[in-house]
Amino acid sequence: VDYLFELKSALAVLLEKAGRTEWAAQEFDHILHAPAKQPKADPWRIKGAGRLATRRQLAALKELWTARDALGREFDIEPAKFLSTRALVPLAQALPRSVKQAMKDIPELRYRRARQHADVWQAALDRARALDDVDLPVLRRPLLPGELPPVKDWRHLNPPARRRLAAIKKVVTTHADELGIRPDLVVPPAVQRQLAWNGWPSDVEAAMADLGARPWQIALTGADLAALSQD
Picture 1: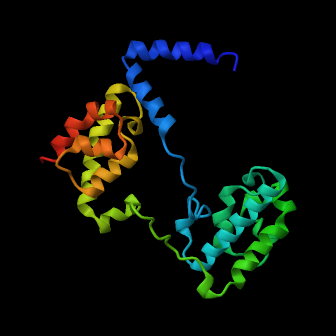
Picture 2 (picture 1 turned 30 degrees about the horizontal axis):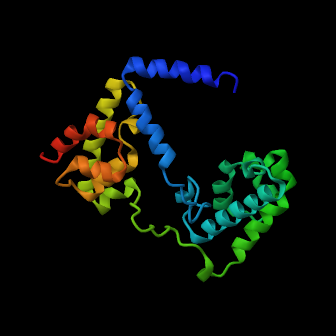
């Protein structure tokens, strides 16, 4: 904390030299007024859950995640301290009859806290195994209103959108390389995806603004993206 004011001053100088002070001001204003993120409907559908081939395995993941989260809340400790997130999908996939036996194949189960709560993980797996088929979660979570499908599915669902996204990313990456910043700072990925999925609007720059792109991002890339719509 003692150095934050000095850091702020130093960064302000760097931004001024780079001609990006106004860019930063727009980003700060965007963050300040951005609506709070809504909690995920299924927070237990973690990265890697797509590897689970059956609804029963998915139920095991849900039970494991819920049990771990309950421990975290009870002891006011980060849930991953009890069982690494890396272990959840492999454990759900294996659905072992004995968690202790699964320790041979899942190293994260050997950590002290994970071992101490082996009965919790076992109970979670047993609950998943006992569920009736009608109570098992669906393999694919239904999309929320306005939510786009994963990009990996666009090949089949919307091939033109996939091609548009590739073209948009090329423009964005070119600008990012020239500026020496990350592509997601040039145009937010969500804006890129929506532009691609919706199809080229009559006014690309207005559409970018409606989707949440900042004025500096539109001024930087809007003309090039509009040119794509003419191809």
